[in-house]
Image (cartoon, rainbow, N blue to C red; front, side, top):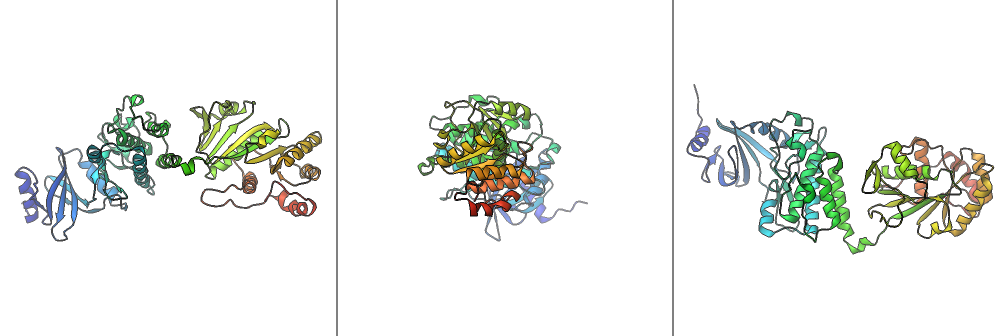
Length: 500
């Protein structure tokens, strides 16, 4: 026996007569007022709750559709997250023909309609919208314990409202999956022109799949066109779009996922820096240059430079290591360490490394500090450096030369002296002869990794230079050598360089 309730009768009768109309009442409480989207298997309505007088979005998915599997995924994801820029699920319903998701109504128009009506955006507007999109997608990727992949970032799934803040909303989670469940998908998810290459060939999906979609949306905002995924290199940008903005988009759209941005936050950061670089009040700011030089060859300058630069990058600083000597050590190290190479620079995690090219290659303008490997010390190093660090040896056959060069450097300005010797007596001899106390370099192991003693040393060196971590000051730790002899140096020496 089949029992048909009044609610079921109302819904099914309407469906049998040719579909839900603007006069339809669903589930005895939702008055349909408009159809937002309609296909053979999915329909999206705007409805008003009869008793509460509030708008709702109702998404209908036919049971006979292969998309019925997305119903469970969408509901499961939306019920687990809470964000003012993502619709809340209020209820789910079912009849003989379809499933229904009742969601929060978000005020706004989709970006596709917005561009059709108002024309393409300026680079400044697209940058602002792009950062907001990144923030929402980043929120999904940061869900614990399992990240959420949206997998259909395109203009019709992004709403923009018309208030002064231009708020952005992400809607339609029908393609979304938890990152550990993407292999279960049975159909292609995504929109042509915005879907990443791996979505076409059922490849492994991850956060970088959404990054491709963000790049495609950015391209649409400034051109009004979708991307031809097979011909990315021939994309046409308006002439008023800067090279930096184009490069951000092109990196998002790289065919190989390893060549794209690896995290959404990196896109937002790049857009923010580009945004700031257009501000003349910020444009003239330059990186703080830390020049490190040795009293002679083979005193460990390159090792100290690379280890210090790597340490700073891990503290959240944007660091460029610059080879400013003709040793060619960086290229040899890059081969041994298998460093990534792109556009003339080597990369190790977040550290950027520039080999010696000469003055014809400009430095990237988005580093906080440049750690410059100057090789041997010369007085001209002081001319264009904000901080100078001298690495000196203290063996018996090195001492006289070290003293002469250190005194010469000290007379030229505020200089930090490092003694690259493992014996404290050798370091003491150097301090006595130059008339000031510096810091003793511990035995450095791997170039791009720090043990505890090395981390304490670099903490102290960064502190003495005045470098702070992103989000807070460096911890002020003291090496055993410094604790023991610093007070004695203060009493006996008129000048105390190289330490706070």
